[in-house]
Image (cartoon, rainbow, N blue to C red):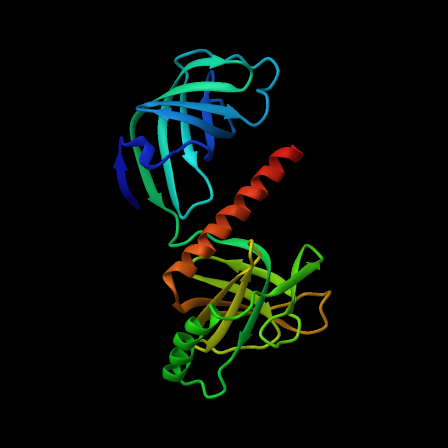
Length: 264
């Protein structure tokens, strides 16, 4: 579904942003790659490629191209025309037509390896769980920061609010909720107290209340115990903490992309 279209190009693209572009070649062929936006002035844009163009590839001014954003819950796309190539990796284009913004899903999801603690309220009462969440928002700011140490590919919590260590786990995370693999089989609509530890500087502690949406049994031959893929939405979460999750996901997605580009 197209949300909007506009020729205010700086509302969608900005300097420093990683983008994907495709350049139309002879016939029906297309060359596509990742690049960084160096500058935008009115309807002109300067892209710097992350790697050299393939040997022997000739591109001339006037070639049509497409630019699109990556790593977002909204996909922005626009047509361009190549004006010139300056040096090996610098390409200069002129936008043509409006930018279309198409919603991919409500929130972009990404797999991250982070500490997370969940707890099922003993009484299961939503009213008391919500009250506890509102209270925790006031108390979290007064607590000392979690103490972390490296563990495998991430960080583990070794001291936090008088609890035992909290190991990282794989979490499919978004601004709207998360999915984890756990040993408990939870019923749909179960609510959980969540503490999500974002390995930022300093560590950001996200207090939220989750509500189970889907549960699927996973058959993994290397695991003795049965695991359940458990998807949940955030029933309660502070708007600023949701924004922190989204910012962290974008940062991790960007780091992953840069690492993949270096390996190519």
